[in-house]
Image (tube, rainbow, N blue to C red; front, side):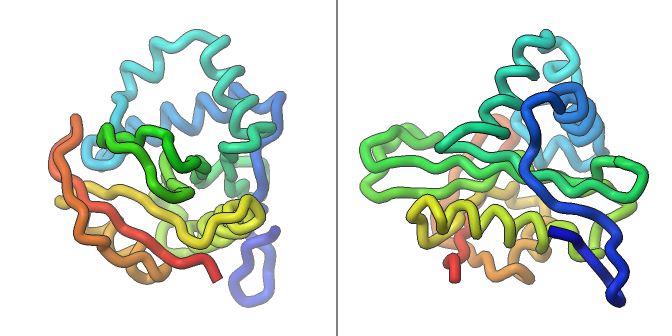
Length: 185
């Protein structure tokens, strides 16, 4: 899928490929080095830098080939990776990140990052649309995500895409968070 503004393709959105583990690693390190990373990611840049190649190869394999997980990326002209989102499909009976058993299937969005130079240009919308289509093909009717309560910019961006607070709030390792959900159409 190609992202466009004014009819001119500016980036491609697609699932990661198995051999791209170094690019997956580089994008995650860039993401966790972002000034807002403290209210966006559960891991630090230092933690990501400490992971060995086999970790990144396994993570990329899961995102590229997994039946219950998929990582999507936005790639600008010249091959620069400018955004990512991962979808995790969860089944009833699985334990969620809050320690509760799921009573229904659930599609979670995690690891969202858009390069600061490309925010507000439709990249997030394209990534979420592709993630939605993949989750829908897996039998899911909604996408769920968690966002830090102090990350107002991200909350506004998600709201523009149809996500709404569910009323679930909790405290994670990065502080108070709220759950948001959007129906898949």
